[in-house]
Length: 101
Image 1 (cartoon, rainbow, N blue to C red):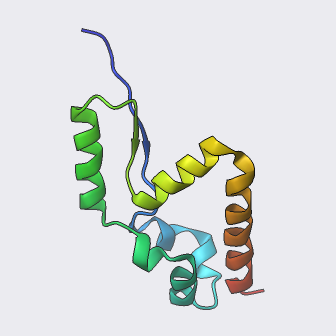
Image 2 (cartoon, helix red, strand yellow; image 1 turned 90 degrees about the vertical axis):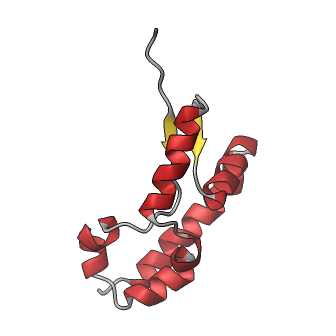
């Protein structure tokens, strides 16, 4: 039996990672930023994410794309990188607008 590998693309998952970054401590209004980026609406809880990952591993998937938002981003990226770049630029612009100077 050989070694099998899966790549996981989770998308937006509600974890404590955001709170642990220095970026969050420099935000004016963290909740406003989350709303604007859609994280409160799109983020999955870690347990749901883990179940989706385990289901993908059981099905021997090479690439496990967890959230619907991540699927859309992956599809856009595969179609053409130029389709995803405006989305990334908009996210960066939004984050910069919410930072304290």
